[in-house]
Length: 494
Image (tube, rainbow, N blue to C red; front, side):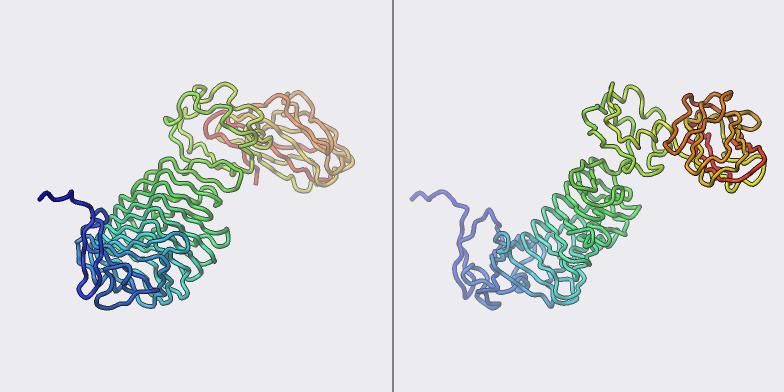
């Protein structure tokens, strides 16, 4: 008699228990069912969803190592843990059933690692971890190779300092598709890499929600003070505070991650990892910027920076910290005509303040102090070569004496010739035309700009020469400049 085609289903019976029909596509090992609502930890239970055991730890004790056994944790299951669940049987998968609040829920209520993985090839999937009701050391501690934590949800309260810790023996771990949400101030890290031996870690497709600026991770969502190697951290999203903080010796690849609502430049500390296509931003309704922000000039193609890719007022003075873009950060010829398309950098692409800094150069300020006699008041020192003075202005801060004349000089050479400044009031402004034969220009507190012609000077001292008969007053002088020769600077005389 001909037999029918083989199906994927087969029948098992637990000794003293019920028959169960199993799908070989799930596993060829044993399947055990856990439900705190209807289960019993005892002989004859666990093989059938109608007769489950009551706890995950008991179900682990029913498993056989390295046979691909699966523990199905049923919807609505709940455990409050005062002793650890020890995953000490290799090759076991613990899989939660249900969605949302119906997922199996675990709550830690003792100073323990809630789940500790000490056998290789263990998988934990679709478990909801509630806020701990007692201080504890971790929700999951990985202390064996090839552990997988997939699709779980971690609500993090004040007691949940670290959700997943990885010890030296926890090599080749996979942490994928999980969600963390901070609900109270206190958590240090979602994932803490504790030892350099935790090599080849993969963390991908997770969402780390720091909750708020107040509640954000105290260390970082993924934190490591160990020199772990060959990690891969990819396609994760981080909100609030630091996302990744690795020790300087940590290696691997960090790629395609997004960091939001933290401090620019502080959300990703990659150690010695390779960084590819990671982005960060610090406010709503703002586009992200690449992170880290060290750019290889060879990575900018001809015409890569187009006018229509830079939003109006996208680059403002407030966005560029003082000395944030230093000469040392930009390789020679990194920004050439070929790199910037025609009209890419138009006036409307820049905030007025930011454009001014680019056009005029840095500001150097010097106050004269009280003017009490005739003579020279040294203002600025030019050192290291030629500079172009783009503006030089003075502002009266204490009224000038009744009979007083001023001249600006570079060494013994006039920058601006004599001006009678008798009794000039507070707020009066002085400027230069840029032509050394012209007198110092006198304005008022409505403002001046200048010089109309930039003035190029060599190394030396710029000073104010005071003459007259009645001396009083104070002036604050401000100079902006652009170095002509490499290393040339202007500084205020002490």
